[in-house]
Length: 455
Ligand code: GLC
Ligand code: MG
Image (cartoon, rainbow, N blue to C red; front, side, top):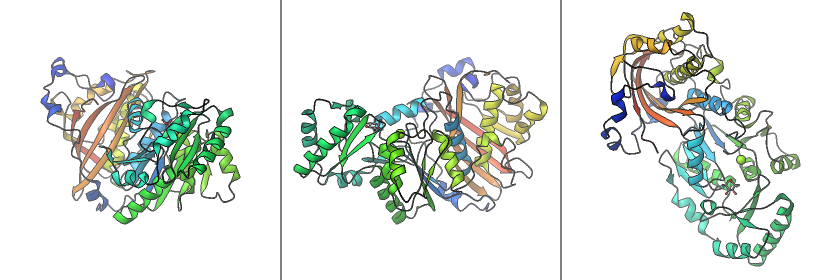
């Protein structure tokens, strides 16, 4: 019998699993039906108070620190968000990347699945895991926009280099421009646009990228549109936190009613803009880099919990039942156990076994159903098996629903990613029930985990 925890080759499948029947994947489309969080919103368990925040973050060098291959602060953010914020909050990524390049990044680093993704510097808005485009937004951007003229004018400037094709979008023309040439090129372009009465704006980011967009586009305009939509559709959040590091993020900080964080590693152009502002109480200049700065801002603006779950191994300890927190903590425990980050003692292992009902069962990815407590004995023997190895594990898209008083159904996705490889995912479903004195107020009754089709 081969049973194991999570972690790349941790789901040690028996031989026959390698030829698991194809129908497992084929019959499920890309949209695994989710339990809507709506039902959980009115959770009878009033003891868990949940923040109401729309968090809008840039990706490169804001959410994602490309200089940290362990992605530790990004993983901290992911677990904090899933455990404490995801129930009633809305996560938005707002990136300069095209949808295609966003998906590349998603394969490479431990990113959560956002509720909304705004791509191509506020020119494309997409919703949900299926990334359904907001066609209304793009129609709105058509007005007064003439892409061809901009391309023609650009071809006349020798120092201007077009970016790769994937980054040339219907409402975005992008170039690489050396810092020393930037001012002159922007001046020249602006003059030309005025002469031609063209409705375009120029944005310089990261000391190298120049984007030309419709005047109506940009990260700020797109966010204002999304907030208006949230208001009219009744899902607006109490607080909005915007997060950025470079020139194309400036607009985010100017949207009415938001708080903002400039991450500690921000580029000159954003720092200069910040210094030139007279009214900036709504902005926090973080001392930490990237996602570390975002967590710092959640605390600074008192938006909700700001201690990453990895740093509170005893659970949230306020006695409230929270399957969401339990799922996050359980996976962090596995991760620490196989990496040898916690001592190999009965006492430490008890954190795991103490929250599993005696008759709890688990259906493993290779199609075997076992008593969960008994099968976890194998995990005990895997202490330190991944010591020193770069393996990232995280959970995403947790949904929970109280089916009857004190009984909860939860679904989520879990991800594993050895360094340098693409992420591999599982869909999971579990049933929990209240348990007084447990670290997160619940115990596990049943789990079912199925590998996700590789995309
Ligand atoms: C991303 C995009 C690029 C854009 C830059 C700044 O890197 O891929 O096209 O110019 O962001 O907005
Ligand atoms: Mg950035």
